[in-house]
Amino acid sequence: FTLFLLAYAMVLLGNLLILVTVRTDPKLSSPMYFFLCHLSVIDICYTSVTAPRVLVALLSGHKAIAFEGCVTQLFFLHFVGSSEMFLLTVMAFDRYTAICRPLHYPAIMARRACWALIAACWVGGFMHSIVQTLLVLQLPFCGPNTIHSYFCDVLPVVRLACADTALTEWLMASNSGLISLGCFLVLVASYALILAKVRAHLSQGHWKSLSTCASHMMVVTLLFVPCIFTYLRPAGTLPSNKYVCVIYTTFSPMMNPLIYTL
Image (cartoon, rainbow, N blue to C red; front, side, top):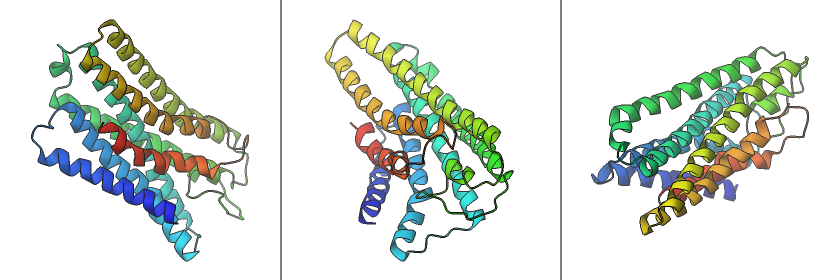
């Protein structure tokens, strides 16, 4: 309980501090800080989907959750989580444009384009979550309905279905796993291009960009690798690991304010 409470408090405090700092300082009006603000909002929402419920369950010992509440938690978990993946991909593109195409940067990352990219992240996350939720709702559940996880997610819930879920598992793995893998590959490609640019034009400023990108890749790896491990496989092939889920729902949002403000 103490660890969850401390981690949740750090997520809230760190991200709220970023929001207040960026909103009150006129100098922090570049697209990078614009996206960072939205990342802070997403991190707060993402952790708040699961952490409060976990804290209440650990404190009171009452771990039961209604089916409607479980589906609602599942929907918002994937809605906010996939939106964050899309946003991190957009932020990598922003850094690639700033370093590799600096002359075109003001035109490419104009404020209207930034808002359009943010909207695309949320719409993409919503569409992904709708698909996942509908795939769960069409399954029959007979009981006993005991989830071996800290929160409701598609894979633990699918394991409770009393029907053949092979097709559903494949569709879910394709939806969540391929989104995670696709965004991760785009991120790696963006940072690889930045690395190539930095090595070709070594300077103090470029070395700072390189160190920043390296720290960003560390946080991105903490989010994407557990997600790829969790979702890019059928539900019945491996036992669920609830500790892996904690990495991308709590630990990664806790690290984002520390790393992205370097």
